[in-house]
Amino acid sequence: MTVKSNKSALVKAVDYLSVHDYSVKRLRDKLHRCGYEKAEIDAALGKLLQKGYLNDAALCKSMSRVYIVAGRYSVLEIKYKLRSKGFSSDVIADCLDGDLAEYEKKAACRALKIHFTKKQDTGKYMQYLYRKGFCSASIAYATENFTAST
Image: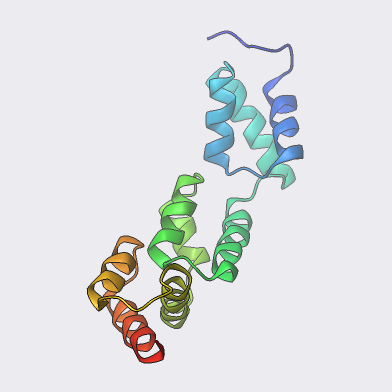
């Protein structure tokens, strides 16, 4: 591949990081798509990691907090979203290390309140939550609470 600009991989990476935070994998992929060689990318990412400009653990923790505060995603969906951002399974497991069962129950209740306005068959509620990635305990809890309140 040919380099599309006259900037070095390090300068290009810093340009990207000045606009948006990236995981190491996503930044590596982005630089590779720009046409930089693997050795140059590795050197640039090494410098950025050494200087502390790239930190997958901190970024993953920050992004997971944003998803948790939103309160509408299942734990499985949060893991999927973080995985799609380029974080490894180990980093995701470390940043989601707490007990999230109570969070997931509340998120399932909130998802039902947002999506359903009128009373329907409980099977529809359950199917919706299954598609969203909620665990069966959270689905049972949310369905029971939602049908009791409507």
